[in-house]
Image 1 (cartoon, rainbow over the protein chains, first blue to last red):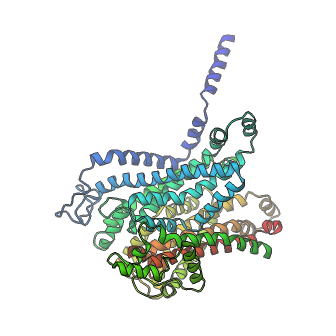
Image 2: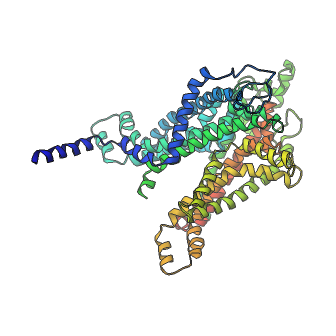
Image 3: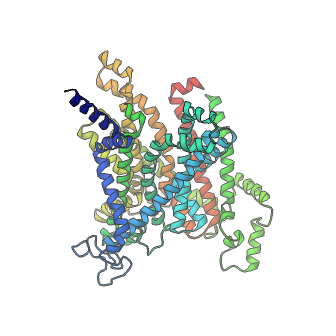
Length: 298
Length: 307
């Protein structure tokens, strides 16, 4: 009898040992149905983006003048464009461009913004003032206009779009991380690390940065959606990808002349952008509900 | 209150100066010789030198900035390279249509956003709430240029009831303003909902209900009034989104506003126009943020007390 209760206790201990924040997060996130479906969509999209170019049914660049502006059919799932190119194949190849541009722009913005935010919040004083006033200046241009200005200076092109979207993301990340840093640096363990002689870099990296992660995860997810919209807007305006590239914004821009005769040329890339941005926004909403302490407490 | 406004205006000055330095440097940041850029690719060496002298590009950069600022203050924004007209004259015809479009978009987006937000909040976790929030999250995710093209297809091409673009009376504003306002409406709806839900958990709402006030009075007089404070801030801060969005929307609808002018100038490399348009957009944005800040302070008694 006694041994069986010991076994039970061991089982409880084992059960508790398996408990982890990741497991808790997953259990809460699974309840966010919309976010879960959106996550599956994004995972599939990422897989398609990287595998798709090798398995697309048609060459996305090869014109077929016998199949111009065909409506969607079993042969061409999303129809064909003004050069007879298969829109479905172009959308798949375009997904890689859109995801690469938005992920790299947001990732670079995240790294630079986080470093600046940590330095600004941790050291305070004149460093903080300089960094925050610079952010204020960048904030005085609306996001898309700042991106347009940067592309106007650097010239059109997909790499310059990445730089432009990155630059307008930096101040938002910096502000967010600075706020979280100001809170985190008041903690006793930061004081303890300082008194034990830990270097500033170590304190910022090991003790303060982890405190900002949950807020950053939510913000990054939302920001990827914004970046996709901004990058496709720039391409639509003729400031991004070159006209022959199967980038979603470019496809929409070149298809607008055929709006009256072949609506699908405009409809398909628009749906692709909409669903992708929607998925990132839904994931962001779900993550916020799970990770944001203010919402959790409510 | 007056002291706070003055303080905020004084704080704005250094930002305005830095913004003006950035737009001044714009032409110098573009790779290549600014005089050559302005004179054009096919210009002779002599023509390039003439441009350099006439624009004062041969003087030290600090002197160039001061003369740029002097001209700016006197309303002299240079001459367009494509039309040969003074930039200020081009702005005169383009500025107001953009302002009307922006305000019209803001107006309907705020009203509809508030209504959807309130309706969702009072029907929390019921189908009107789900419908409202699906509409809102979709509105945020819609690419403006795509929505514009779809609206043109439906209302202009299929039904022929609204113009496809250009500017010819009030009807020309309808589709662009729907396109431009959709995103803001969604943000306001989401924010109103969460702000209302938060307010409705407050003690004074419970007290209101306990003392037997009508539900409508509790919602309109107490919950909404307090939620409005933060909604105003969000709506105001989204003004920048409208300014950026107007560039895309004006291009879709060939609307003769400031945004379209900026994009056309970029494609024609009309640098004096780009430079001044960017400056104007930034000034407009800073000014709106200041007004929102003051309005927020005026609406929120807590801040008034602190200041």
